[in-house]
Length: 143
Image (cartoon, rainbow, N blue to C red; front, side, top):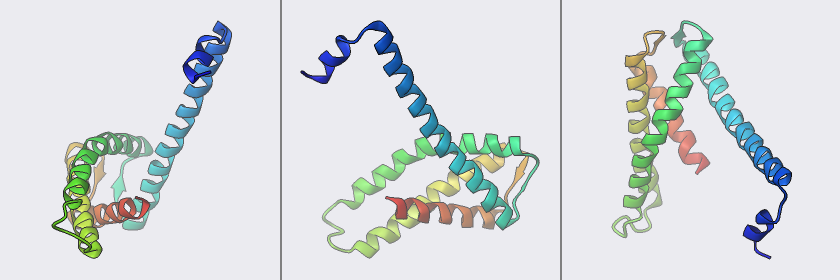
């Protein structure tokens, strides 16, 4: 039997249970990912001496960072597609250098916009550059 038929043959209570279970699992995963970003920003901001008014401001910063990063990922994918061009051939180190600087620029743009829009978080430009480079490095290493 195909999976489509298995779900069709379930009773209403079984279907509701499956949908609620999957929703809870997805919610837990999203919450864990958000928590990793949130507590990561708390630690990074404390290490770098970035001033934020309260935890709610940092919460909003994290939400907006994730939201804007979803759109920035489109540009990161475009860079990856361009780097698959045979022009770059087997020069892996060149690909990683280009990825690092392009990801850093994209992250810098997101952080700069957030710093400009949010008055409750103050980030110096050099600190924005450092944070964007750290995030770019983390993005490349986890790919």
